[in-house]
Image 1 (tube, one colour):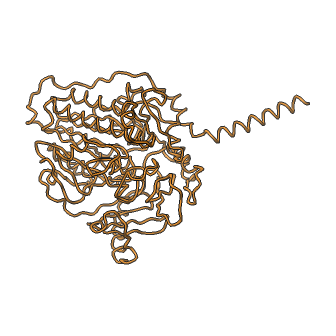
Image 2 (cartoon, rainbow, N blue to C red):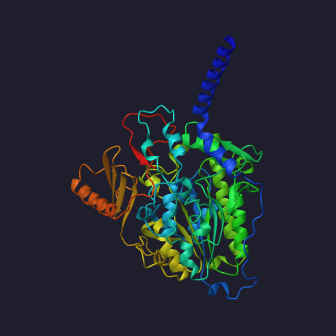
Image 3 (spheres, helix red, strand yellow):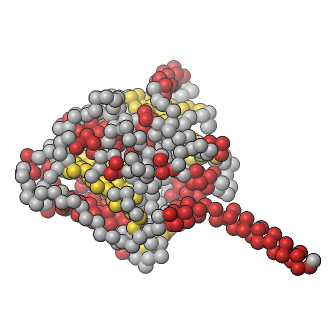
Length: 546
């Protein structure tokens, strides 16, 4: 009898301990499952298919090469060309000095994958149901169950999980037409390197959506190096549940044309640059489109030690790691330009540089989007202002400044115009061709633009911008010509303007289909302070649906 009680007590104790361990470490599950199903292989060589060894047409007589470089979560104040920055970014700055820039350029969304969907298709992502960033349910649950002491807690919609499509199928439908598909008729070879985040299943990957070759992080992010490598310096963010999930689950790996995960042979920003140089070399004698989607400076914060060691004047460890990540990103942009020059391709190559959205609130740094209010996951200017630098020496005069408003959805029409390619006529395209403005410096005509994530909806109509939020139930009205940093809310003083702009939001929303998958999470994001700042009464915030 005594033995039975001992066994029973032991079983109960083990059960309690197991439950406690599960409650503490359950968010490691996706990484463990992924490691079992698709373990990361050792590094493998990547060989880009080579074009002609000699050019049949001189460079100047071919359609231009087009390189779209996209940074990830790059704040507008991370670029020293705008007068700020924690470190100089001379090679990114050079794109602006030697090309054109748009005064008011916007991301298509305040988070990554809808923005990228818009870049590739030239359409509002809501037009084909891609309203929310693709994340697995366990990711949303992890964020919702943070233990952070805050008066406003996130909402997890557990009732929406049942029947939701698998994470791998959350992507741009194959029926959508992407930039490489448009360029193919003009003989372009299309290459993808870096982040994708537009679907991981068959039919949704880059090589299924018009790209001839793809070296990809298919998910929303990945490690920059092995965290235990002596060549990397890490900075974890203990206040951030997103960071906790990333470190627990994301591998240091890439996939070649949808194959098995394998380890890059160096710090991943440098790896993507090296592979881009090889891709350019392989395709130097034919027109190519290169979509180079760096994952820097998105978390996890990991810097190459040799870059970190040169920044001893930055005393805060986290800030120094972040700055070193920018150094690697800028170096890559410089190496791309140097390669084009060495191959005699620079004159007839159009480089477009942007970020998918603004700097993130969860990094905990105050000035990423200075002077604008807001962060990634808000539609205040700091969340959606992005750079657009366009360099094409054969067509764009150096130092061209373009007034007016541009957006990610303009990339499709602009790339097609540069290539002399026909746009699809069987669907509505929301973007416009910016090439006449970039080449002449003429202002972009006034336009109306929309953003949406669940019940948080925004319109910019000329200089007027209205934000409508359900949680909290309020609106913000700003005249961006007079108040570009959104300090003076005019909604109470101008109800007629609010009503007019709200009607535009409602009319545009009525055209949009139901989202392809529901938002599982609504989380509060404060407008004026980062995640690690203490909550204070009266702080503006929005609930971001994802």
